[in-house]
Length: 132
Image (cartoon, rainbow, N blue to C red; front, side):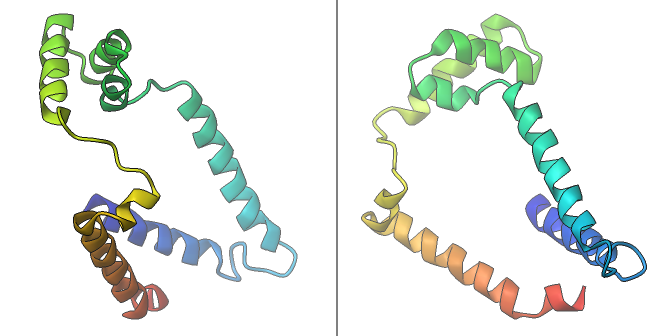
């Protein structure tokens, strides 16, 4: 749900900034893209300093780094983090990772892919973005 809310907020903010009274003028058309570029660079720099996902680290066998990541993100003790790591291991036991093109080979993943495409198509074609 939060993704949909953020999408709608982005559409509203984008529509407002593109208004001729704000940045939608002939001389300031570049300011919208400049603002997007600044945001993209700022977020990319912030991501460079964030810790890796604990689930990813456990999948790669880097349990010490995963424990540090869990302690950092959740603010819990190391013993509690170790219990979470063991739970992550048991949850992913026997599962093989799916590649980008692997979703087209597995029937279950392919069904989810088409459902997602259908939802996105419906959202785009219903005209809500044009109304906002």
